[in-house]
Image 1 (cartoon, rainbow over the protein chains, first blue to last red):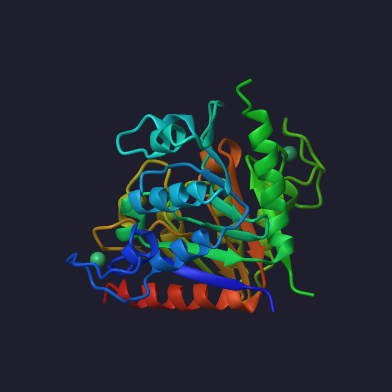
Image 2 (image 1 turned 45 degrees about the horizontal axis):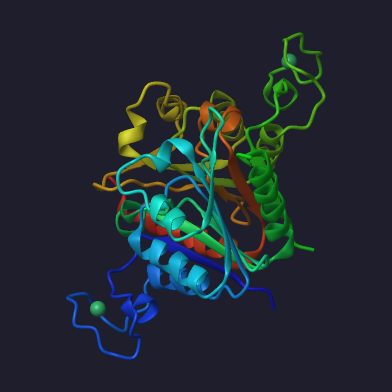
Amino acid sequence: KILNEVIFFPSEMGCVEHLLGPSKLYPCFCALPHGVETSLSRLLRHLLSATSSLDLCVFAFSSIDLCRAVLALHKKGVIIRVLSDKDYIAITGSQIGYLRKAGICVRSDVGSVYMHHKFAVVDESLLITGSLNWTLTAVQGNMENLIVTMEPELVRPFIQEFNRLWEINDPA
Amino acid sequence: KILNEVIFFPSEMGCVEHLLGPSKLYPCFCALPHGVETSLSRLLRHLLSATSSLDLCVFAFSSIDLCRAVLALHKKGVIIRVLSDKDYIAITGSQIGYLRKAGICVRSDVGSVYMHHKFAVVDESLLITGSLNWTLTAVQGNMENLIVTMEPELVRPFIQEFNRLWEINDPA
Ligand SMILES: [Zn+2]
Ligand SMILES: [Zn+2]
């Protein structure tokens, strides 16, 4: 049976330190509810399931939780490629600089139009895509959707499109 | 076999009068290429396949071609419900007013956050969703994606979410 899941936002509030924190075994004393599954925790869990690669094509990237997840995967040795919109990278709160500083390969779209995608491909087999920009406002505020699927007919075109955009935005 | 299709944008340029025009049998003399399948024509074809209902949940709606498609379905007797973001409805170029004037039932999200969805459900069985706002810029300019699927595990949650948002935004 092929994984097909839909996640709606805004996410319920809930602590995600058990997924992202440095000491996952110790209890957290922050003010958020603990032990609750939320839209954000489901998204993080899918991202953190990566074992070999993560391709990220995101218009905006300012969510600190999502940035921590990507940095954690990078530390684990997962090969990460990030493609983002050049106009958005310069905006306050963008986490793209932190990814670059950590040694993650980031390319920015240099065209005159928006690179408006918001999708991720995990291990070349799991697609996460929808209306959700990778921002705090989108995760906690807006009404948004995400599809999570392993259906090859849906995943394959996104892999091809990522590779195409990655090549045409090669700065070399 | 279940329909699963991915459409990327920007759309190639191409005349869509054979899909939308009043006299589909006569040749069109406009300056656009004719007889070419484009991303926009594929999207229009899926929308125009509606025979009983079309539920539309769109942040922005300013594309004249997409508006013409919705008006054509309305004329044919397809039951149409449109849910849009209250902030966007007031913006120049919004087609929402034309839909209302034609007698289509439109509800606007009255919350303080963005209703950022961009999805359509055709005949309660076909889901069209992605990053694409229903604007000319998105269709002709941006890099965007749309998933078109009849997979029940993906379609069903969107139907439920549409009905939920429709009810909570009842102005009555
Ligand atoms: Zn906590
Ligand atoms: Zn023409």
